[in-house]
Length: 265
Image 1 (spheres, helix red, strand yellow):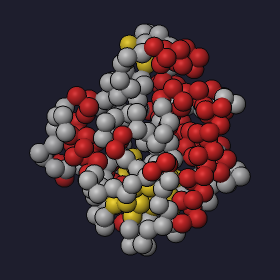
Image 2: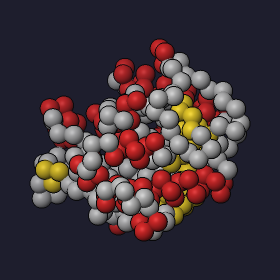
Image 3: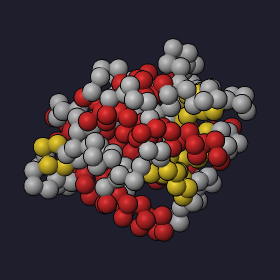
Image 4: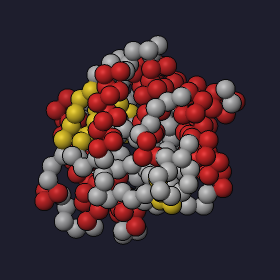
């Protein structure tokens, strides 16, 4: 194993174990994308082949058919305890948001609903700092208020990667084991561990998806990378943003921060 991947793996496993040890009612978000598949894999390693908390898929009903087939296949193969959450109509979402952001915000409301229903005190999410500027401001253990709101200006310091694992039982916490990983790290780890991913990531007719979301607000990017090795080599030289195919990221400049402050992943 590459030295940097071993370090990242060990850190993520430590974070997962600390979260399980310190938070009473925990769940792991499974978006079906490459990052959350890596996170599921790490959870299997952290807990010796049996994940001791449920996975949550917040379903907008607008994912690619390939993603649903992948989910149904690996729920059975990996024997996952999966909870499906559902999202409200876009008509019930803040009309001041741009259209694609409103569509994405449905997931926020769906997640809030399932957190309240199941009384989850902690949610593990597979975000990374290098994905987007607002996510770069996140913490490994990130407290939210009772409404799931993230106060970007009031986050706990994490000096030298030291996190606070102990929060009052009334506080909801988001846990981010992959925060220090990069897109390249993710793909190198997928190759090393032979982790399955949705085949939309691989080029067909000169295009592939680098980031997966709802099919009506996610577009492929130009690419000839049709294997994991080719994706890795492409990423070593690419200057194109990972989220360049996400319509939401091309709307208002502050829209992502607005969504995340309200509880978006």
